[in-house]
Length: 367
Image (cartoon, rainbow, N blue to C red; front, top):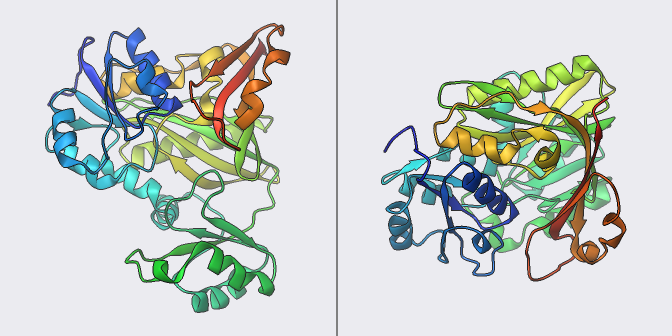
């Protein structure tokens, strides 16, 4: 196992989505090959990777064979089993480390991590039962959000509780009787709904030499917890921008990150930042970097995990990124004649409601 992976080496990627696709493209430009490991034979990343393997993430025989053909392993989404990454560490280098993914996968551990390093989050409490929910919500107040500890992304695994009448309905929606007996503890967290001015994200990187760099904060617009649009630069005060970048850098150092990590934050009354969650991988809200920044987030990830020296990203344009969800992918004609606009198709065969099928980025001169 070596810290420095020479160009010509092979990068193993767990996951075959669009982030893996973009990572493969970035790796190729830097002279690396990529090996996609994914259960889905129709994944978009393997369409352009050098090698691929279609097996379960928990297939140890396949994982070992995979590890013997790569120089470093990374992941492109959070639902990879941590145990699989830990198993791979016996045979090859894994970056970011499995314990970082373990924190990101569990909302309780995530909140505790940020609170322990002195970062502010919305008020929250752990929840283990319907009885506990009835008690704790009186401390948090209404409206609140009940979120499962695990398996939550793009609005999944959560319910807004606006009154006492919503308590039982929300609990039953998230937890079936057989689920309540699981070993995961706590089962959920309860968060106070935040009255925020805007949502932003900051993507931060850290390389093996300890260099920590942050990309420009991005302002994000969501609908039903799905990202619709990202605008860079975010329209926030300079003080808030500086604070957001410092929070991201602090988290990267404290968690011993090697690679890329996105932090999603709430800006409250333009005076305070509350950390919402993190994703230790390239992020949807960072797609603008492909057209308006050097290096882009995917190139920065490859540099960091391969032991190359990273550098401060420079934004040279203002940018607006719009996600193409579901059948939006068939309505791109209106973008074709727009100046300084690029359309990205992810190569997914089936269009489903709310599924990210591609994105469009428009740039204009930096103000």
